[in-house]
Amino acid sequence: AQKKPSNKSGPIIDHKPNPSFDQLAGYKERLALRQISKLHDLGDPSFRQHDGHPGAISSIEGRDVINFGSYDYIGLNADPRPAEVAKAAIDTYGVSASASRLTAGERPIHRELEGRLAAHYGVEDALTFVSGHATNVSAVATVVGKDDLVIYDSYIHNSASVGATLSGATRRSFPHNDMDALETILAETAGRYRYTLVLVEGHYSMDGDIPDLPRVLDLKKRFGFWLLVDEAHGLGCIGKTGGGMREYYGLSGDEVDIWMGTLSKSLGSTGGYLAGSAAMIDAMKYEAPGSVYSVALAPVLAAAANEAIQIMHAEPERVARLHARGSFFLDVAKSLGLDTGASVGSSITPIMVGSSPLAAAASKVLLEEGINALPIAFPGVPMNQARLRFFITSEHSEDQIRHSLTTTAEILSRLREGPLQDLMKSL
Ligand code: PMP
Image 1 (cartoon, rainbow, N blue to C red):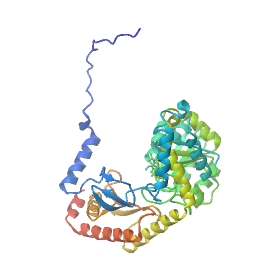
Image 2 (tube, rainbow, N blue to C red):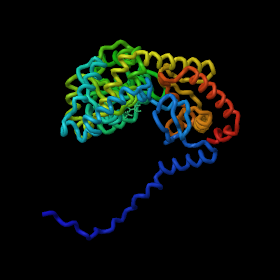
Image 3 (cartoon, rainbow, N blue to C red):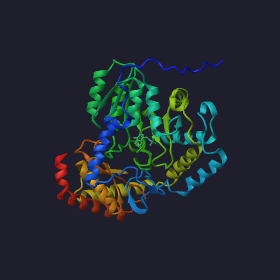
Image 4 (tube, rainbow, N blue to C red):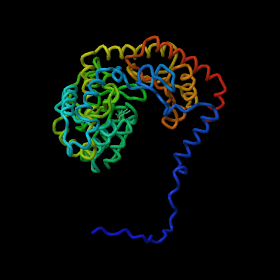
């Protein structure tokens, strides 16, 4: 028989109760920033309503604008073919997978997609998850534990660093792309931990630069760690046909222990994946919390990604066009005297602005001029390291790029002369 809950409350505890959420420090900071934005009419670039596809042109609040805020790098989000396949998959499988594959079994489309992903990396097997974020969190926390060490590039995505924290392993980060610093940490820690896992990305989304992977692989030979490469922004963007780091550096798939990626960017779907040895994937299937305790990737999303990756391979002109547009963007920006940081000129190029209010104001004026480029400002980066971030796709035309950059250069020089100066000095 069920025990009846007691209606007697216990003794009053002499302890300060939790504050209400609007009293939390983070919330108060956000309100203060919002006040400053309002005072200076800087607007809020987040959570704007887009109607329709998030492509090179997007309809924002009822107006078509040139859009540099989408990860639809090779134009597959709006392509009718993955959409058709997805609609058919809903008819066959329904919308949701309804439970984890351990519980509810898998659909043929899961294994078909995973086979294609494994072939893409030239490895034995692959496994999909509901999101890229869940994939990283799950994978990193599964591979290492409290007796181990995780070393990561300081620009690594939140999902990988959350996984590292959850794992309970010791964490060390090295300055972005500084392989000497990585070597120093490896030398200092050699022999002190059970396992060591190193985390890098194949294409960094803040600066649009790439790692010196051959150097990392050389260190891997010497120190014997495991390597996870996050290809979220690499797939479709780096390498002649979008093969990512493996293609760019001419590697064999098994030189990297764990290839990680997302279906949500170049492939225009949603979900994440791991690829590597059969043993690694088998371990992930039965141990990774995102596999064991979370619903399987929706078959409809697996079907869309499965079609998209085939289109990517069959139509290499998409990636070629992205590369042409990306380097055109870089050349025009440089010719206008804009600072493009360390970008290699593929799908991500920042325009370094410096001051956070200037980046916010420039983004707002750009939108008024029909161009969407979001600011990365404080607290995402230090107050004086703000930038406008441009995501370039194969579907942007040269005219759109030239026009957008000329307008950006004009707006930045106008704002640098104007009344914002006082605000910038005061912050
Ligand atoms: N890794 C990196 C490098 C990312 O940029 C992102 C998302 N922006 C993720 C992982 C997570 O992917 P998803 O959005 O598919 O969850």
